Image 1 (spheres, rainbow, N blue to C red):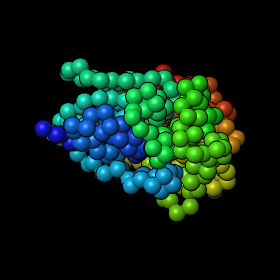
Image 2: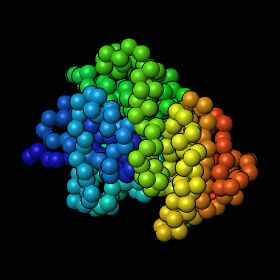
Image 3: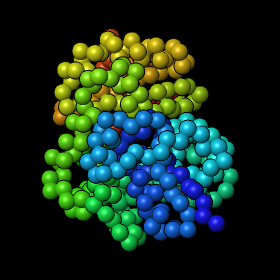
Image 4: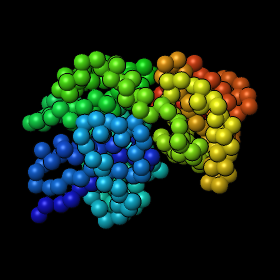
Length: 307
């Protein structure tokens, strides 16, 4: 009997999360036609992801608000704090991810984790080695997700495998200039016009539990810092409001300039943890970190280490 199985990325989804859900649902429908695999999402897509889906002719995944009683596959995350409502009541069948592992399961499942720049890199490799067909649109999604998560190969998380898979996907998607296309994708998300401070902070936001301390880290990417600098006080006020209303110990917003290759951290809460983690002085609730672009590799491990 055919079953519905939902493929879903993390809350506050980014391009890798959404595109990986769409691509892996397509992959599974090819290799396991006896079941129905459905791409799903937790929350609204950002402007970058919307641009990518429109560019390659895809509809957004279905919105899944509660997974209780459902069969699900997790992509681009494994931690409960970043996952769907009803996580404990769902049947988790697989995990495909590239983040640190903080996952427990009562029975054996298929779990694939690789230290690469994006989940899309793992899936692209799977398509190349196993799938019968990789159409132009799927290749475009995977390429876009790799470029997004590796910040057009500038992030410290970028590996040779990311480059190799991206080049192959670009060929299939008929993209001649990979880096130019990557900047095009990034520009779709870089404008803050029309977004509230709350929307900006939550556009790419993750929760973490560091030894019973509640920490939230958001990230936005810009090609010109002028707009974010003009709204700095507004963003800090909103960070303070969120921290107080939701009982965070520390909230951080990374404002990453992909052209200058660095990030300004806006900090609310335990700023001493930021100072200890990066050996810097936080002034007026902010600090600039040159060369820092990856939340996963350059921010999270160091902050976690001081808790």
